[in-house]
Image 1 (cartoon, rainbow, N blue to C red):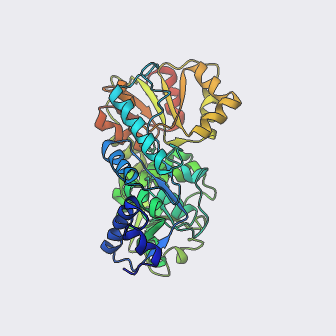
Image 2: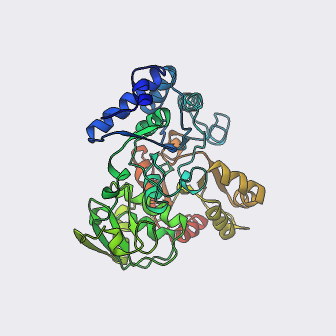
Image 3: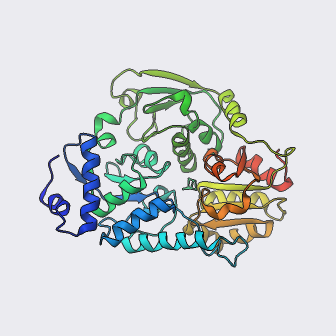
Length: 404
Ligand code: F3S
């Protein structure tokens, strides 16, 4: 791999041990992928997990003197104010201590403490062609497919190294030839709301490995729907890129999406596929009863919070409802009185928090309802279970306490 003077100096430790460590990891990744050189990045997003291994790594870099050249946004951990030991949902001292360590490490490294998993919608939005280092399942396909920026599917650790060094090895989705589609996906299912894009993303088994090119989708597709598609493509499989013909910037035509080649495979997705997935992926309930509802995995937008507020205004929920959002959406919902409406009905708008965090320990053994398969997938390891339905059905179910 050919390195420039700045990169060599960093690797040789002339900019400190922490920066050298980050560069060494980046160079090793590049060598593994036969990258000829390193290229500068202008943005990064680190999918911190607030788990011991991730925090250990961030502390290791910080203690070795590393500081971010490119301040990355970061994924949610859990909101200490909301889950404080004196709050309605107290966490153990051990869990709170880990969150404080995570916060301190990323603060010290110079990260933007956004604690949000949808930065590509508001706080960290790349331009077309911009080279970035994005980790997080919904983030990488969004910046590649929707914004036409260029990022490989970084891990939290490699994205952090990129933020520290300011470079990524040039390989994979950074190169034109690796961004073309190879699977033609005919969508015959009715795509009525963002929920169906969750379902479409969960078709990874049927779509198979590669870059899908979707045809048959509506002319306008909302940011929430595109967010859901990417999130679930990386729950059911591993996809850094997709194309929607006539919609995403690198797919003005079918020919452009495939780079003039023929698709290697064609797949048809129907309503029946979605119904089968819904049944297969939902957990058992106790006679149709649910204990709670959870939304915002990935984080809900202000628009979605407003939508729920409108549906439950003046009513009382039969079970608790948790809506995970960015701190910006939370603040705006407070200013607009949306949060008051939600709170009066029994819903909680929670900023900075991920569905897969130890703060949800009190839901252990319970069955909730959600519109997000990813929300159902990860908390299973914590013995928290979910039924999956579209958002309207979830809201109606939360009002009665039973799956509609
Ligand atoms: Fe976001 Fe955590 Fe879900 S990072 S997408 S809330 S698993």
